Length: 230
Ligand code: MN
Image 1: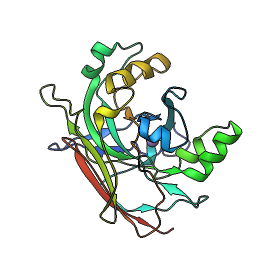
Image 2: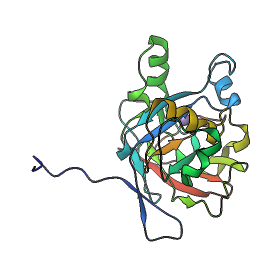
Image 3: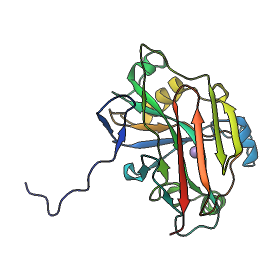
Image 4: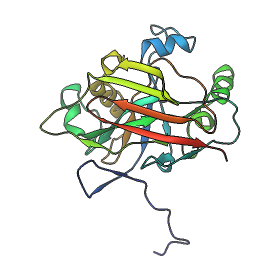
């Protein structure tokens, strides 16, 4: 078999303290996983349980490279999220076994065309154009889980031009990381190389070209990059 043209290369993410890189298979995302964010979006956490969507694997941007302001929006929002990187997968994974599949964690930004998402929600249409666009998933290097140390209790924060906009605790998640893995594995066969963006806390808002976006998760790492005009 000969490819008609050269296949696109696989996205890869650096690992802290290793020369190896993590080849990205799929990017799954959880929406509405922090109560305060559900409320700021006009929802009710009791009536709007977390939801899954996805991004293309080539949406990742690594090494703090600048991100180009995307077309077709005038309301681009940042969302800082804990990213789970899987070393293995499967279907119907139990909560008890879920963390055994985790290779490590990273800091990610789930960029969102909020104007398109609001319109999609209103019309009951898919979120792909609002969430799955080019460069919509900047991701830090992955911190490997060492000796079963899963940093799932620390602070998660984001600043724009040095001003803090999001500041919360990972323990505020509605679905914990083991619960997310369990739920996802009921719908999809998870695999090594999958990334899971686990949702954002309150404080989302619009950014413009020229803004410097920095985010940090305690015990995981940090990311900092400029949003540039197209
Ligand atoms: Mn998100």
